[in-house]
Image (cartoon, rainbow, N blue to C red):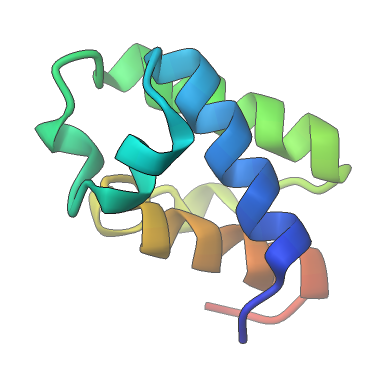
Length: 86
């Protein structure tokens, strides 16, 4: 399932926090490939996306697999926004 509004929100917030252009972010296979990525920034990304979408991600879903790639991070928020389990 692809929700453009969720995807755009994740991209916009992640690009802002990581200090990269959204186009660069979308083209990067893993967020960990970006020199500005670190654990503190991913926490900030998650918190700001949660706030913007008015959702709360289940802490059990906050795994490296879900947080280190743009597509898996977006999918996590799409599932959370729809209230479907991982």
